[in-house]
Image (cartoon, rainbow, N blue to C red; front, side, top):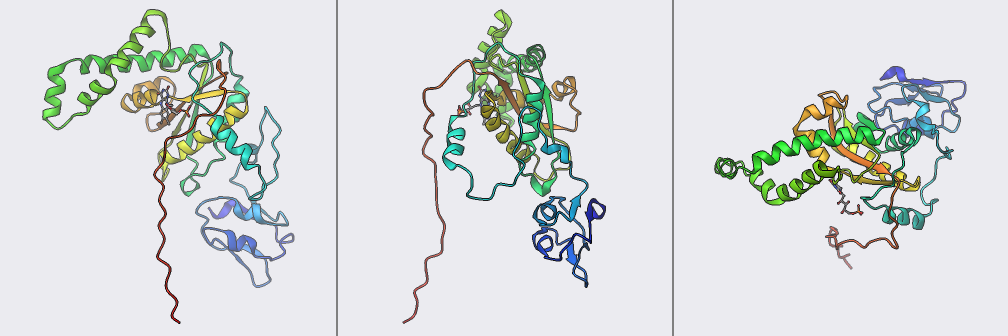
Length: 308
Ligand SMILES: Cc1cc2nc3c(=O)[nH]c(=O)nc-3n(C[C@H](O)[C@H](O)[C@H](O)COP(=O)(O)O)c2cc1C
């Protein structure tokens, strides 16, 4: 990626900050004390440009439009560690809840596009940023998506209802269908019946929009990248007055039946890791919920006794 850096020598003061911060050791100082690209830039992370006090470096492969939003004015300045309101941040994190009741109100497309941009501020393995975002922008399209997922579960439930098949597969070492039958069959069947009877949507909870977060081939950590981007979207949506719910049932259906993605315009080689239902909440909480106790451990070497 040698060509993606543009260094204006006249502006470079030779402080060496870019050289020290580059994770690829791709920069060095020339004999006359100017920064130059001397190695392979593996990440195009832009740290060199961000740290330069003279704005002497541009990483041309990075898209500056990604810093622009259309529904709010961002504060473009870098926020130093310790200079944000931790109490406010934790309040936001604890107040985000999975929303399963939505108002009959559409979500503006610009808001969904801004949420996607916010998603892309997440870290990604080797900075590959090979995530993809598929917006389902309105209720009508959500219903179509719902039909596709329902068709998958209808087929699966028909198979799972055959006890001989479950037993046979289990005997052959494939116990998945049997586990599905015991854990999910009944619940899913009730959801499918309600969907067919009067359109009750237990899958997306009636949400008017969704963002599907996936990854193109070639990412070193595609699932982690997609889920980190999703985490940003969940928190940002709450800040924007929206509610969200991750829909694992839809992710599972899309993983097992690639034709669902195909019908939504998603290329076959992309994988979807998160389906985020989005809409204006029709519920308000009185307080945040607690969390179960976590396992937390600390590893440290025993301190050495000093010889006296
Ligand atoms: C990977 C994942 C998949 C989920 N899938 C569903 C789902 O299919 N339907 C649903 O209603 N909630 C789903 N949830 C939401 C969880 O049930 C929810 O996060 C959990 O109960 C904690 O509640 P909270 O999000 O309000 O804090 C999912 C959450 C995660 C992290």
